[in-house]
Length: 206
Ligand code: IMP
Figure 1: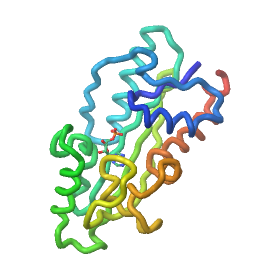
Figure 2: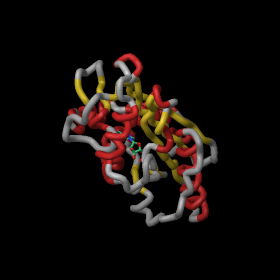
Figure 3: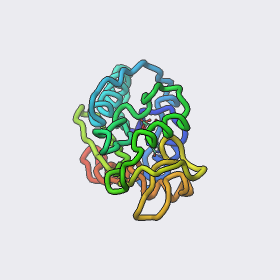
């Protein structure tokens, strides 16, 4: 049996391999298995979108007769003052191909004059697992912060340069990559999923 992660993103694969390394199970990306099917992420919650992705891949692998655990993630940024926008639309906010410098500037502008205590925001990550018997399980984790007044830091991606973590006294884009993995929404959701898999019956029977 193996784990298949529903992403083509190399950065995410590195992270999941690092976190799950002590599970002693082969971990493949959908790309490595030659799966390239269109997936319509039309859910309105992180849970729905992660489940849609995991199920689509699980169905394809079941057709091929493979016994696998399929994992998929969905994540995004919720800004409280903006009614939790951009949320599940984080990648599509202002258009998928719009540079993040423009998306980030837009969020800062929409929060003009808003005091620190109302600038609260969080990165959310949900991981969905579809097990070989067809059952599903989800883990969710967040990292809390506030939207800054300017972009800061050269690491990370997406909304990292405007996301300030008061607990650590720095912006998300100022963390070294392995340091960010340890505290990030995705890192924490993956850790929770690892604990679930470790204790699951499917895993014991592998
Ligand atoms: P995905 O669905 O997990 O690929 O992520 C959706 C979008 O959420 C990304 O394209 C980013 O806009 C945003 N996002 C998710 N996680 C992060 C993060 O750790 N830093 C910055 N932006 C993020």
